[in-house]
Image (cartoon, rainbow, N blue to C red; front, side, top):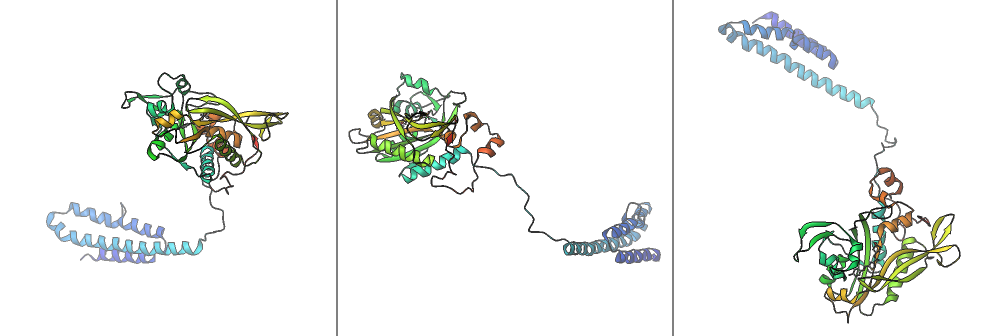
Length: 371
Ligand code: 2U9
């Protein structure tokens, strides 16, 4: 046994025992096991020995190394535990400090208005129906009394797919949500009371038209439904939506292929400081009428094509742009901004998911409406 090496090991173990910080420990480790450390140098001498000598010396030197490195690890564990203890004893956590701010999303005005509408119509006994945005020609046009040659198809210019339906017509992006009502009538029959909210598409683009926009359509089919029911329903809905009793409607004769008679609905407003404020008759001095939505009694041919007997069943339908309703209620003036995804616009016009809801689910309507 080489007593010099044993002495070195004892010395190293002694110094390790005295090392009172991780830095001090590291210094001892480097002196023994660092590149130039005495134990590393000793290990190197093994390479220069002849095989017989190496066989005798190898296990001994390796044993020294193991004793030293085990002792280093053991001391390191003790010092690390002590360092953690010390840190825990001195560090405190102030739970009263404000939490760091995390970016917060908001509810898009279209989603907000959709929710409000679903709630208002739920109170009137309507359920929500949905359907695909890619439709066939029959459900989007023909079943709504717009056969292939019908001129009204031109107003619904849309986006077509190369894929064809069973009749050889190209599939298309729906131009209104009406195909949803056709599906519902065929599946559920009558009576029926539904709203169909969703995205619709037309080849149109300017400040008030985007190629994709949102619609909500309503459909009531029952026995003995008449225009009076339509007028009451629309009036009740608009009063709840705009959160005011002062809503005056004007029903104007119009034409849609899917309704007969067809009625366009205007709402009275007052001009106050250049802003349109809903309320009052549009015929009063300083007032005007603003077109809001389209509606009518469902055309008997549509009822028939949906598989119901028009002698037994009749009803009313209406359609309105959800984006337009949002603009009017919340005062935005450019429809395109709705779909730009600009975070600044969204944080200005978006709604907190935690806002206290009003009766309609809205967050309190400013009475001024967009130009
Ligand atoms: C069925 C039968 C009839 C839905 C109707 C309108 C009138 C209408 C426009 C409002 C603004 C479209 O978003 S808009 O550009 N809609 O004027 N929509 S009646 O009539 C239907 C729907 C389904 C089965």
